[in-house]
Length: 340
Ligand code: SAH
View 1 (cartoon, helix red, strand yellow):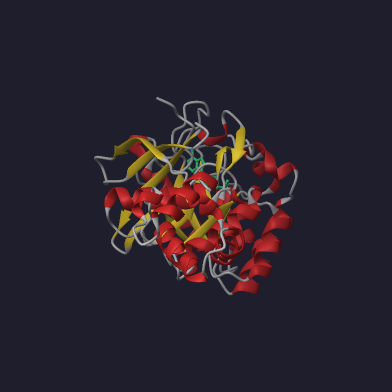
View 2: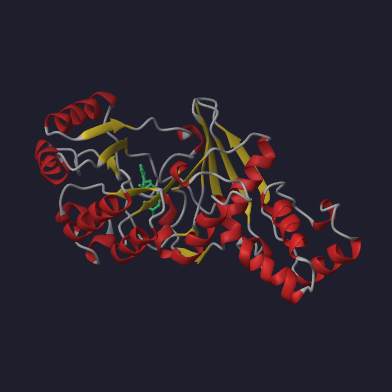
């Protein structure tokens, strides 16, 4: 029984039907778990000792163990290495912006998507995370810093749309006013482009931001960088994200890691113009972050600026993303199941 993965209604069912307690006990319990971020039943002082003992026996409370926290000397970004209840390890990142604190969480242990520039996929996929394990990355970090997390990006290890049901449960719980109440508008989910799940997610009409990992201006180049392109053609992916934007009214963003000599030619800029110009999709450029196994090289700052200027001429709404935490391997595509 993973009690921290139960949304409010399910917890209420468990508390009243299985434990035979009054509904208000569910309210207390939910608050301890998802507002006070309790790490053990002993903290829940307004529950009777008897109930706490019964819960501890029937629904042991799991938490993440902080193994390590590296702090960037460049920008104060923190990278956490957490141990999961089964001994696996994941990484999460805290970033400070003037608008608040943003936490980047992992959705899986490892990843099976195989993107050639990304460290998270080097050892393949071990398993998907439970909703409680996604929540707990945020809870642990908020407890650790004592500061309120205002934004969440599901851009750590793993492909969130391959852990779709747990992702939906997580999104519902993290934005629940009875929990941490992080507004859906402050949540971004990034995907490499799992087409059927994008359509399904659109129907849920959540106010989250969808980010597409695009990384190439055409199908052929994309196939070289991202094996998932063999399954879903770029044209289908673009259709799906445009549909997502239309149905939800939310602006879609696209991520584009600039890899020197792979996807940053004049021709690439022109093709991107045709693909995105006037579409309302916002493009985030990221000079590719170093990953030992990939051997890919980022462009210089100046080259990146030039590429950006070309894209602007083609009518693309584009920014170069300020990468944070690079000195601690905490930037995009640098997270892994590192163990001590
Ligand atoms: N699987 C999801 C979630 C991971 S998000 C997805 O693909 O979107 C991590 C983001 O960092 C993705 O946009 C990914 O493509 C990007 N990324 C991976 N490796 C990178 C690297 N070396 N440099 C810059 N961005 C990278």
